[in-house]
Image (cartoon, rainbow, N blue to C red; front, side):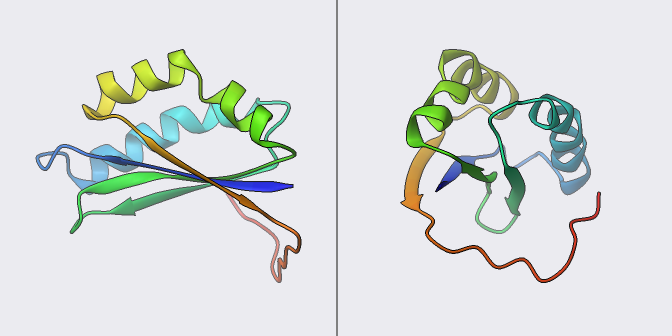
Length: 100
């Protein structure tokens, strides 16, 4: 299993409400993705950064999901290019059930 961290800069004029609304719109896409184990959305208004933390079976699955269409969507929506990091995830601890 791998963890992928995707971050991108957001427009300084884009407030929290707008960012969260855009996240909620994209959540349906990710809920339906057959290879995705989990996604956590990230938002740091002070740094002007947003993104997500994804859990996949492989880097190949992550890269397939974040192909050209994803790059275009981020550029059109947030005006930036995402950065990708990949980590082996040998152990996962989840103490509480995930709630929507």
